[in-house]
Image (cartoon, rainbow, N blue to C red; front, side, top):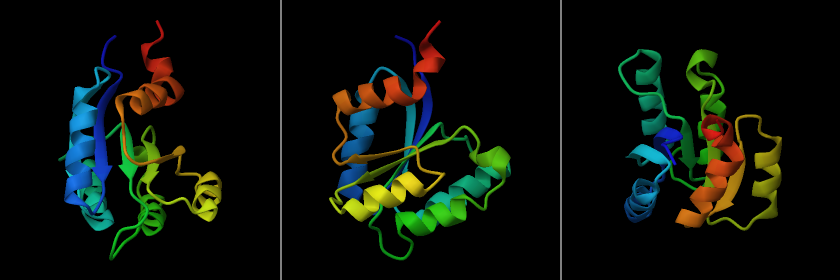
Length: 140
């Protein structure tokens, strides 16, 4: 199977979680490149660089909800203000330890969110994500 997801951006304030998730993503055969940032603010700075054509546009963002300074919900508000040409085609998946049903309901209502999954990532979970969100890229 070819690479169907060229670039993943992981947004999580926890270094250990980013390290683990980065390792899982890089082991999966459908993913090419992964980068991590530790805050919503750093992610917005990265996406601003995408707008300025100085950074690679991600195909997929894994976003933690509970982060200090700027949480995932606040990031999504700012994400929705970016140029449509920057955000179009980016799948945003909330990746959280939250079991709060309100978080799931809120993610369903948010037009920027494509899915809500629970930590940790696994190869099987990535299989499901590829099939659900990127299968049109590999079905030839």
